[in-house]
Length: 132
Image (tube, rainbow, N blue to C red; front, side):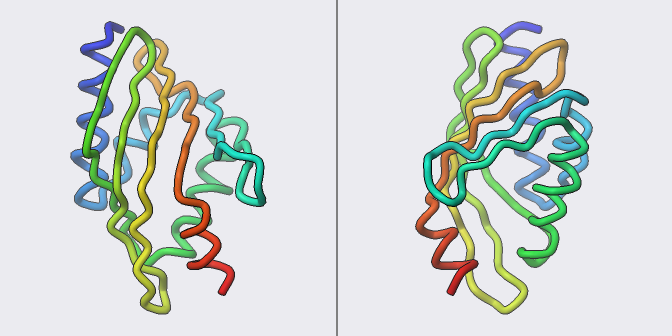
């Protein structure tokens, strides 16, 4: 797929995530995708394969945040097989804490699927929200 097509796919995914519909996002993941939480601290982690992403990462999102999970893209830039998405969440924990993290996802696409995401986020917000 071209950069334009890759960007369009991510625009479609984020237009749905903004409303709380994660199905297009989950369907776009390749079976062998890899999702990395970037950094060197306690939140740095790699999820290897779609099943790990869906079961471990997304399963955790569904229990630590009040459904539905929402994220809105502020900027999407595409070049070749890479699409970079700057986004902000619009979420709340089950006990009522706001959790509106800011994200930068560097996504590698291939054959119309998400192959990899390197996610940069405010890990201090994660710590304050989920460990206090």
